[in-house]
Image (cartoon, rainbow, N blue to C red; front, top):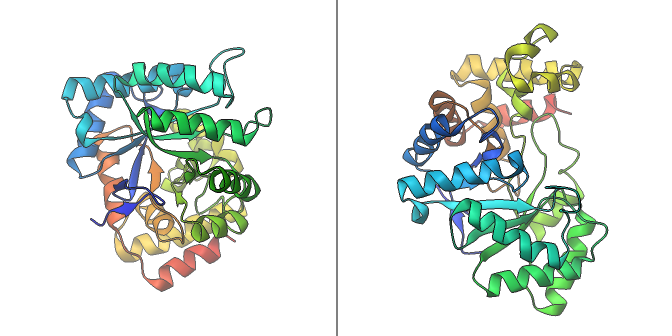
Length: 308
């Protein structure tokens, strides 16, 4: 399995990042350990979480697993900050970042974070202040590289100019919402920027919160999981057209819809690796198949057209 480099960093990993949002939500600790074990056994290494997931519970389970297994050296730790942890505890100010990184390190039970990401833009804090704080964290050895999530092309342009002019750390990754259904938030100016400036892209909601697995075909299916309540926005003419195109490719190839969705995403320009979650070992094995699946040019084109 070919590794992909994250932006201009020395961090390389396989084209699947485990989405740690499920840890402590739909996947409690004992079962989480089994799924994370299977993730490593399949040859993957990058796990993405955030301080706000379960208000620290996801990072805590992640840290407990690494300590129990003694495998920190085999794992790439990606986490995020900026979303509200409690009243008055949010954002990307230098003061808050210096305090919050210590909380994440404590929960993760590690001395450094491989990729520390701004979870969302903070209009109340100048980007220069945030980037200077990141620079201090990198120089202190607490962080290897930094990334962003939910940033626009314009925000990246501004950040890139600040980093270059001040000779400080730059955003080497962007985590946008991007999948076969939701494309307008990434394709266009943001995708062009990331490709042009070698900013790695690790999209979240790669399976559209589960819609692209094909298990939600009508409102009657919404009760199949805690995420079912989100499916209404996808179950429209475009969504059904996408499912129909995926069904045809599945019939021809034998691949599941989730595998097809991941294969399409990882084939898009600029994408480093898809983020996807699993709540069972069987689901994890299917995700592994998806990032190893190569679709034909005609299949990729059919999927792209279906989602327009």
